[in-house]
Length: 210
Image (cartoon, rainbow, N blue to C red; front, side, top):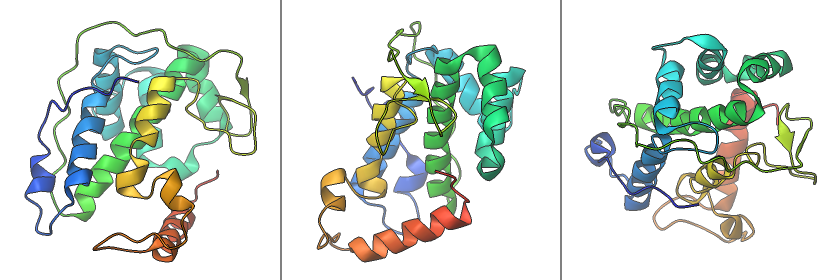
């Protein structure tokens, strides 16, 4: 995946009342830019419209309704909601919408907990959808086409979204390598048991079905 250049400055994070790590600000800038870039099945303009709908504006059509539902009440999203969106837009656009909303939600919640205003959505980048869609995936317990295996990734149908989502792990949580190190600790910051405890608690409160 070619990660879009940082086309915005996350001024809210930079001006927060507490110091925000540089890698978090850079991750947020690059993730925000990726929302406006052409994806596998949606153009940059269509992706920004999904983000607008997630935040509650321009909610028109099944895909935008699904984006709003996923953003505002993720614990209530069930199989029928995913299938309803996919019956109109198709699996790739539905999966791409899930990725956009998941990343936007994480960025917006980061701003909220730091007490800063949400960033305005970026200007769409030109270009049509790339058509990069994984083949041979099947619907599994996560409601969308996934690869086989004990820990399938729900966004793998649209590789751009899967990689953009995974790029957030390190700054917001831990990289895969760090997850395997029981002695990992940020300096300054939390260690592995503390990070895992917080993650488990948040997952429970958010009723994460996965």
